[in-house]
Length: 362
Image 1 (cartoon, rainbow, N blue to C red):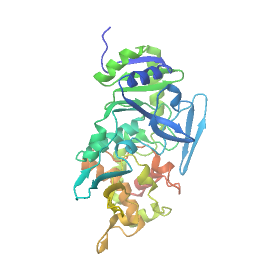
Image 2 (cartoon, one colour):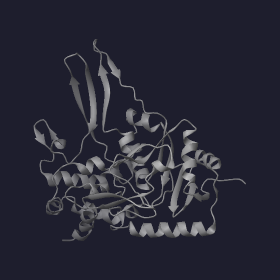
Image 3 (cartoon, rainbow, N blue to C red):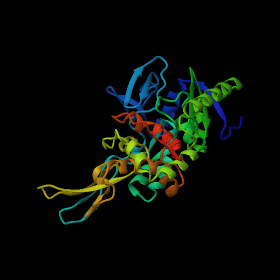
């Protein structure tokens, strides 16, 4: 039987292991969410039992907890694919004894992103555009051979991808997507490479009943994840309050400028460079993540562009909803909710942008 892109297949949860093994047979490193001690991270997996399919992440403003359940629903943690593709700290080059610049070799092997969520796939699309001339990022990005997405049938407590249009389903940019429906899994194919892979795994065409359950689950998930006003409404409201100092002072009243939101955001890309030398004569240049909520972010010789915290918080929000759109044609916020979950003060971005809509006309 001829198989086509966009076709749906089904199988048991156990077939996810067949998929992992088929990828590893190609000599690829499979990267997914897994436990490292008690901490959920993104790392190499080898089998189904490595995946967090028996865990549920319980998220709320300023709170994250991982619970083990027989049939868990895991979304994500503070780690995102950005941690792999746009590494937090990286040596860019070294200086030899005779002052020659030596570019650092990157040992990132050919890999697969497995089980990432639709919001993080959308974040990769943003980073691809923003960092299109960043050769360090692009070198790693080119080594991602497959992207396998797990669609969200049950959004998390701080998710709002339905309002942004970045989930809970995917439509492009993936090789294979799957959705867990109890003990059954529905698969869909997004590329020729994905189609060839499906043929090796032993999947069967999805039944009408499985498709019905899938569509019902995704529609309900989309409803639950639509937790702010429509994106275009939010954009217009933020344009109107962009210079409303009172609004931003109120919105940022609990912010402490810790930059947690910058660090966990899957689309924040800012870095700064530091030069180091030691007594042996070795010298090197290193780049590391830097966040716009940090006091020194807007500081230059002779002045400070955003000396007050409300100015820096305003920049963060406007950048996500307004400036990215103008820069690369995509929202900078993908609705993953990480900035809400990992804010130590429990500041809820959904409430901030919703208040902006209500603030218009005051």
